[in-house]
Length: 196
Image 1 (cartoon, rainbow, N blue to C red):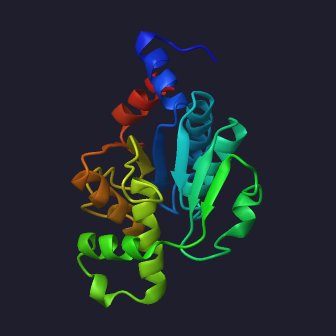
Image 2 (cartoon, rainbow, N blue to C red):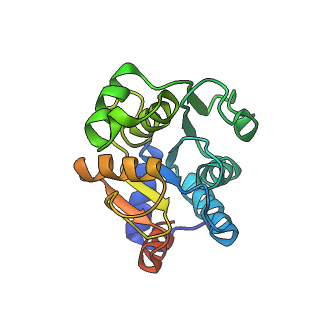
């Protein structure tokens, strides 16, 4: 797939060196948008982008299917071992890295970003701690170059309606000044399409 312009070629060269993006969003993403996500993710994979996602049904799994179809590398961050295992059965491939549970530091970091952390049960905390890795990598010191998501309200900052895990990831991204492209916004779809 040829690059469309000089900027796209430069981005492709940079991404082949391992630039990562977080592909996240709602479990309730419309079917048509899931198909668009798969297509965009496949094109990003072809350009060398590394996907970070969490294997939740809906958006996460669409990003993963697209990245794998495009021959791309992926990092899967799970809240507990075996989470949604059927959706990533090829994860033993050498180009898929799986972190089976969040690190202790991810829980500490996540507690700082969630306004009601003390009220959450352990399963909810596991899911939210996993989101920190999606945005900041396994070591929590390697921020994704961008976050690509879909939420019902088009949020880019973690405020407003939408899934709690996605809002958590967007709050972390905002704090780290990471670009967020929400595919509920037509301008963001155009921007991502120009990149891929």
